[in-house]
Image (cartoon, rainbow, N blue to C red; front, side, top):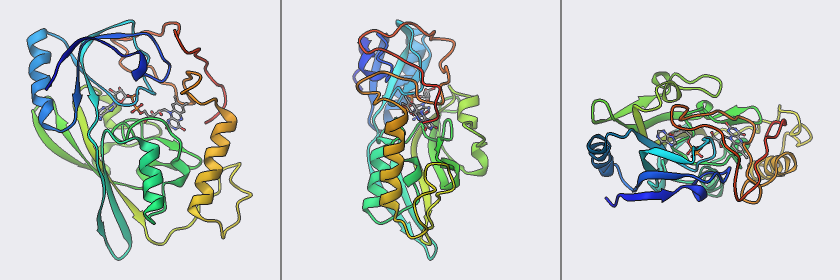
Length: 259
Ligand SMILES: Cc1cc2nc3c(=O)[nH]c(=O)nc-3n(C[C@H](O)[C@H](O)[C@H](O)COP(=O)(O)OP(=O)(O)OC[C@H]3O[C@@H](n4cnc5c(N)ncnc54)[C@H](O)[C@@H]3O)c2cc1C
């Protein structure tokens, strides 16, 4: 593990806030976590996990050991009589994962296309959009319990999912999510009940729904890569460490519209 001091996080958060972390390491597999915990104890700093940085407000100086979640990989685990079971590493980009499932012939996640961030953060606030939320398709996840220092598995019931909520959000420092497994029904039906998707007919395809969702999202919010913005579900996480400050570099706005 390479621990980098005074790491610039400006490009690691979608608001583009200028921020420097005391110590940073990339998490490319689970074995790094124990070493990160050791470093956190040695330096007397908390361990924080950063995915795509699309739901955090960073202080100018982050007094923490920050693990940049980069665990890669996505695969078809199993095809049962009723479901396609797919898994992705926590560091995978969420939208790329959704697009991969559709390309692979496993529809279901199309309404969740275009949500910024990583697969590993998706269960934290039980991401949702256009009438669908992660928990609708969630099967299980693997996490590292930083208190017990061991790997553990969570099924849907044990995640405590609620509206943009989960046990991982209520107890943010305890678990590092490593991978997420979803079950996508083979018997696919479009979910077009949400306003804006209604004009797609019952015979539409998952690709068309995804394209429509991306167009609707693009019309409501500017692209955060060009103009830093907080999306629609803006939660100040890492609250003990971070306070909102003016965005530097990119101009930050908060949109009152739903993404
Ligand atoms: C333009 C825009 C549009 C958005 N639209 C939506 C939307 O439609 N629906 C929606 O639900 N959300 C939306 N969001 C919010 C955001 O995309 C989600 O919350 C997303 O899941 C955050 O992912 P991330 O990887 O960027 O998380 P980060 O911002 O990096 O982290 C968020 C929190 O999760 C924790 N975390 C991250 N990864 C892990 C991990 N592997 N293990 C444990 N904890 C972890 C972090 O410590 C932090 O507390 C939007 C945000 C933006 C900027």
